[in-house]
Length: 217
Length: 300
Ligand SMILES: Nc1ncnc2c1ncn2[C@@H]1O[C@H](COP(=O)(O)OP(=O)(O)OP(=O)(O)O)[C@@H](O)[C@H]1O
Ligand SMILES: [Mg+2]
Image (cartoon, rainbow over all chains, first blue to last red; front, side, top):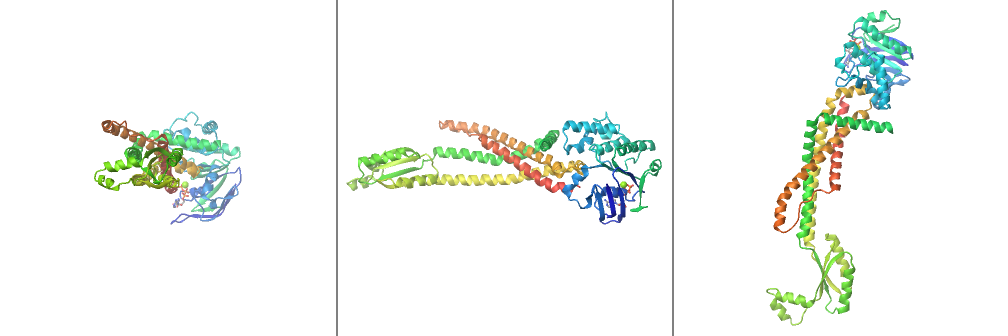
């Protein structure tokens, strides 16, 4: 469960990027965070894995006040979340396989089990067979899918994805969305930020709409 | 436990692969560290050799036991038996009072004095050589010998031994200072190498952190990198030292042959060599530790 109550965020020396945001995402729920560029979508998402900390208010993730977590506790919070970043953050000097297997390296899996899970994750996003490739050899959509595979390889209960369909044609975007629907179907909580209104139209899901850092009701 | 071992093994393997992936840089670093380490190591080795030589050729510190004038033959034998039985004593030589007087007469300028004496005033004496030539051990032995009945006076010539010990101590301090100075240099070299490595891997470190790597996990390969670099430097230092001694021995051979000696400079003992590599590894690890502590925080 993810729960924001009266959360505001002001970056050092900047305007307030989020103002008094309050909402709750139940386990197994699927929701979008929508809004124009600069509305504060990324900021909201970054508060969940405590990449940023709220200036005021509390962010609860599975009952934990993540804004108050000690630095040493952050890795354990993040391992239980599947994160897709707006800029993807792939490692371009590693193979596709190494990118997917990265989160498994610091949890307790034998190399054999890690390889099995990495291939399973690649299979889910349709990239099986490209393990040896370098991420730069993948198309934009394939790189998005690689980022998703890395986010789900640890089988997290919660997926938080920032613009996972950016820069894709409508058809590819929908294909990627299908991947998230499939994970949600087996009980994974999903939160996706997007500025793509067309994407929202087709699917009847909850939308948290941001404008100028405020949540519209 | 198995997970812990695996993580360490992975970190070590990663560090090794990084070293092997940049062979020229690795070699260059190892040489820099090796040369720095070779200096105090040579100092230490030469000092050890020098002490061996001087101890061999220097006048041996001796103990002279002068007996009472009225000492009888059985008493003389009893003293000799005591000396023979003492495990600290390597050799015993008897100088009778007649021999001593003869020696006096034969000494230029003193013959007249000897003639004027009439009666022989000199006592019988034992000249003793000890196994342990350290000044303190000699002092202890001398004070024990003074307690033997019949012994009037014990004279210890330990000035040379004290001088040698002082020279050795000075040499050791100099080598130690040099080693300390270059240890700081080695730490600085590792510190910088690891700093560059951290900067090169900034992106990977950032991503790893974002998806749940602990600082310990991120830091570990860098520690191993420092350790391995130090060990590589230690090995280079040993190679340099070995080469230097081999070259020096060419000259030493001629010199020693002219004295009819088989003397050669000796290489570091196995224990010393291992200690040096261990020390180099430790310094490398320390440099890496300092660098990681400082630079990892700057990447967020
Ligand atoms: N690290 C930062 N430091 C200062 N200001 C920031 C920082 N990150 C974001 N902001 C500001 O916060 C506001 C919201 O940014 P945010 O990235 O959350 O928007 P967004 O909705 O994700 O936009 P986009 O659709 O373009 O990704 C913007 O005005 C931005 O300038
Ligand atoms: Mg954004």
